[in-house]
Length: 158
Image 1 (cartoon, one colour):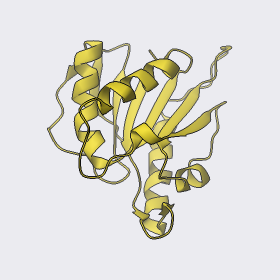
Image 2: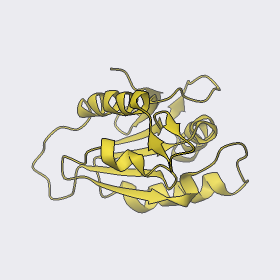
Image 3: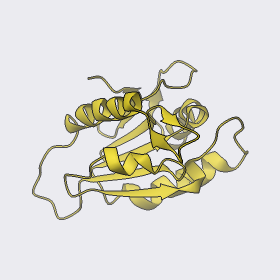
Image 4: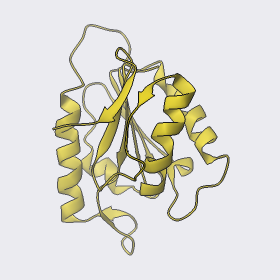
């Protein structure tokens, strides 16, 4: 697994404008990027340091989430959900995370509210992490972080 796994809710965006972030959403994602800088430290390692998985309906994330630190971004349909969460979707997301997690120091998953509520406790059980988070979705631009060394899940602080 990556040293840090971050589950984040996207910034606010315009449903009528092909997923383009609103000015407020751009600000929320820039704030998230600042928070992530605290986790991403330059190291002399061969593997890339940063990877972002995002919902396929959020193409605006690419323009705001400037990829630095040797990072990459991938948009994926499994990270999309608005009102319902199919029974096997968390399992598909977990497989997607496992596919990429061992190759990066920090893996960020940017997705929707319903997934940000269900995914952290699901992954905590799966990976054996202590998860003391409230049972609620994240607000726009908010995130939780899985710390591999401490084996804990907590809110990402600025």
